[in-house]
Length: 199
View 1 (cartoon, rainbow, N blue to C red):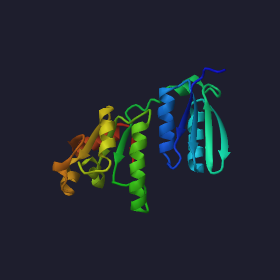
View 2 (view 1 turned 45 degrees about the vertical axis):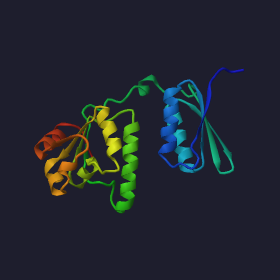
View 3 (view 1 turned 135 degrees about the vertical axis):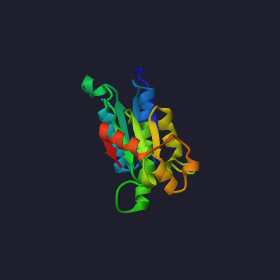
View 4 (view 1 turned 180 degrees about the vertical axis):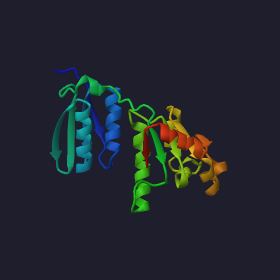
């Protein structure tokens, strides 16, 4: 009989990214265990499968009715050693320009933004700095639905800074709940000198 630990991650009823995040937590805490993640939609099935393969697991999928059982066996599909090392992003900077993601529906964009911050907190590699300008400064205020996750990033060492002029414009300068208040000169200097991702 095998002594390998077998663990179940039952995330039926959950949409991505939660199935991947919960599977990742169990994987990080139990790297030698066989993990079976149970999901009930195809998108989550595909995303958990991709996660497992990216970590070197052998992934077997079984369907029972509407449920999918993804059994991940460690070291069954080893990835090259170099790819196991965290990527070096150097001084990667994220410039947030509004309080929702993408173009089109702002309602959808605000829901996507919630997911973005959850994924950013769970990511193995994080940016060195995140700057907030225009309406995105609302996300660092005390009544922001994103505040908890942005605080977690700050606690992890990510520099959080919001444009002072923008905070004044929206009347929220006295309500900043995380990070520092900066100016456009400092933001411009940073984004010209570093690798920048604009959202």
